[in-house]
Amino acid sequence: MKKIKAILLLSLFSILSTYGQSITRIGGTKISIDSLQNNIIGRMHAAKVTGLCISVFNNNVPVFTKAFGLADAAKNEPLKISSILSAASFSKAVFAYIVMKLVEEKVIDLDTPLVSYLTKPLPDYEMPGLYRDYHDLKNDERYKKITARMCLDHTTGFPNSRDFEEDKKLKIKYEPGTHYSYSGEGIVLLQFVIEQHTGKNIEETARQKVFKPLGMKNTSYVWQSRFNDNLASGHNSEGQKYQFYKRTEPNAAGSLLTSFDDYIKFYTAVMQEKGLKKTSFNEMFRPQIKIESNQQFGPGALVNTTDNDNIQLSYGLGFGVFNTPYGPAFFKEGHGDGWQHYSVCFRDKNTAVIIMTNSDNAESIFKDLLLTAIGDNFTPWYWENYIPIGHQKAKAGYAFYCTPCGGACDMIPHEYGGMCPVCKMPLIEKKIPTLPK
Image 1: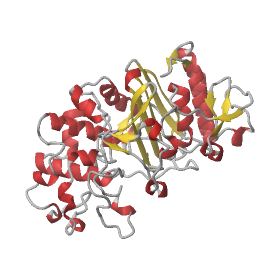
Image 2 (image 1 turned 30 degrees about the vertical axis):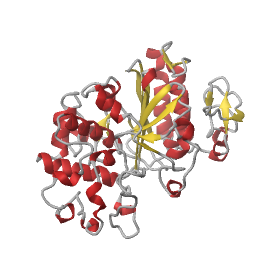
Image 3 (image 1 turned 180 degrees about the vertical axis):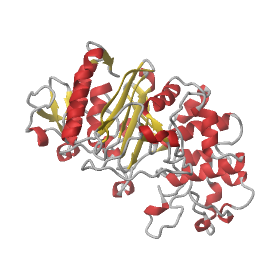
Image 4 (image 1 turned 90 degrees about the vertical axis):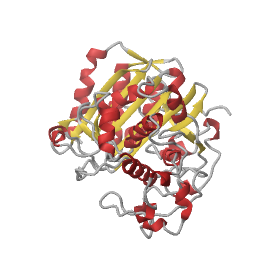
C-alpha cells in the first residue's frame, strides 16, 4: 500500500498542466480537472485500488485522460495509458461493432437463425480448445431459433458460462428471444458461426474491420509478444497479482487485450458514429429487451424488480441502455479476476466516461466517480453490483455527502471517520436523489 500511495501522490503533483481546466457534466455543472484528480486519488487510496485509467469526454472528444496508481504493485511500476490491459467484457463491445459491420456488408443478418450459416447441425461440430462442443444441445432444438440479435442482446437463453452450471453442461434456460440473461456463451456461439461462415478467425476480422482502420496498434484478441514489455497485471483485493494467461485463441466474449489509449480510439469512433451507418448505431443503442432483474448476476438475477423502471433499463446490441432526463445513455462493463471496467455515454449530451482498472476493489468507487466526473446519478449501480464500502446505508437509500466536493462518499466514513479525504470537511448523511418517475 505504501508503494501505491506514493504513486498516487506523484499523480497528485502532476496536475499543474491541467490547472484551471474543467469538465462539463451532463447537467451543465462543471468540475475542475484538478478537483477530479484529487477525488480519484482520495477514493483509490480509501478503497485500496491498485491502478485506474479514466477518460472523460465532452462534445464527443476526450478532454481528460489519465492513469493513476500502479501497473504492477510488486515491481512498483506506474500504470500508463499505454499499458496493456485485459479488456474483459469490453471485448464484447468491440465484437458487436464488428458484427454490425458484417451486417451492413450483408455477410450476416441479425434475424436469420445462426444454424442457416452452418453446413451441418450445430451439435455435430467437433471444436477443440476454445470451442467446447455443443453436443449438450442435441436434444433441445430451440438452439435452431437463436439469431445474431439474440446473441448481442443476451436473450439466447444460455447461461453466462457453462462452467457456472452445477453439471458444467451448456443448456438453454429460457426460451430464446424472450428473457435477458447475460451470456458469454451466446457471444462465443456467434463468433463460431461467423468464423465458419467467413473462413476467418475473429482476430483476423477484427484487425481488418477495427484495429487497423482506427490505428489500434496495441490491441488484439490473442497474445502478442510485443505486449511483454508494457503489460499491466490484475490484482486481488489485497493488492497481490493474479497469474496472467497468454491466450492463443481469440474469444470475442473476453480475451481482448488493449491499451487504454487504444480503447479510447475505439470509443471515440463509437461516440462520433464513425465506421458504421447511423442506422446501425441507432439499432445498437435501441432498447431490444427490457431488464427486470434485481441484479445482473448472482441470486438477484433470478428476482424481478421495478426498481429500474424509472430509467427504462434495457439491453441493446452489445451495450446496455437506459433513459434519463438528459436523454438516453448506453453503457458497457467489464469484469474479471483483477480487472474491473465501466463506460457510459449520454448520447444527447455528447458526454461520456471510460474507467479501466487492474484491481478487484475498483467497483466500490465507480458509483461516486461517475457522479463526480460527469454527474451520472443514473447508472444502476446496485444492479451492476457496484456496491460502495459501507453499502448498508446506500442500499437503504442514504449516503454520506461532502458538501464542498458535491459528491456521495458512501465508503469514506469507515476509512476516515466521517471526514472527506479530499477537502477534510465533515460528511453529511442525506437521502440519495432519485429520478422522478
